[in-house]
Image (tube, rainbow, N blue to C red; front, side, top):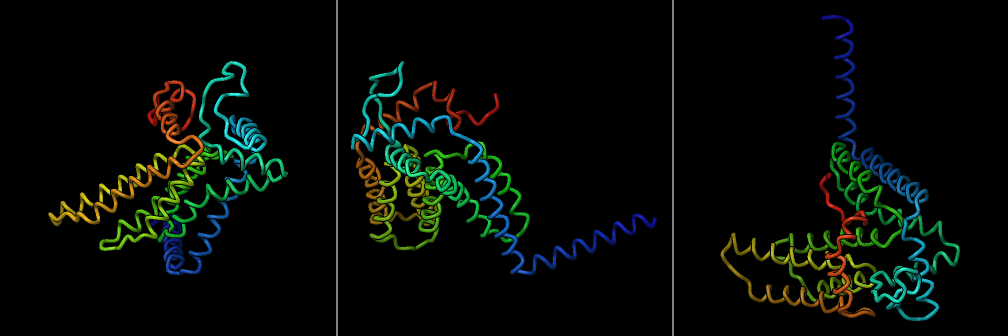
Length: 280
């Protein structure tokens, strides 16, 4: 064997031996995970700091109007071409909070808060990873959503969806787990909060429905038994989610706005997160 090839094989063997030793060192893995999370947080902070969402000025102006008038807008008061048009601000609470923060010179804190929110799902998955190979798809995900991350209410929906998924997965994923009144109350409060922040709450309700159907369908498929009591409780949970989402300044008008958005061809054409996932 040639000396060069032999050196390469020896070096490779040492490298793999070192990686095996590192993998067996739990403390080093924890430190490595912490470093990765801090790098992701820093990356999002840099991305958000160098980007202004096209709707940011609109959010600030609407928030200013809400706090000055102590009510939510019901017609367009700000644009020339659509002045007087009836509309629903499904992000009214977030707009008011953003304006209050900017008005008090907390722009840097807002940037950090949204960076932290965008990092939370990835931090959770990174700390749950058991090997270094798991980091690669997570880092790909970080770069994939970097064009989406900014100071915008949609980021809140992204994080709330993640939190709701993990809660439902923990509860419905554990067979025989008793879903008591505190669990139902927490979910209802969660959906109510979300419904006043962003219209993405409708995806949260759909997620609850999906878990309920999947849980009872799987239970019936494997055991041929149908627990009427538990199913009734879960149906009440789904109905409760719809009812608490109506506790907002616009009532059922929020659902009308969601339907209008879903039917609008302009939305699919110009708003990034509504575009098709397929290349055209």
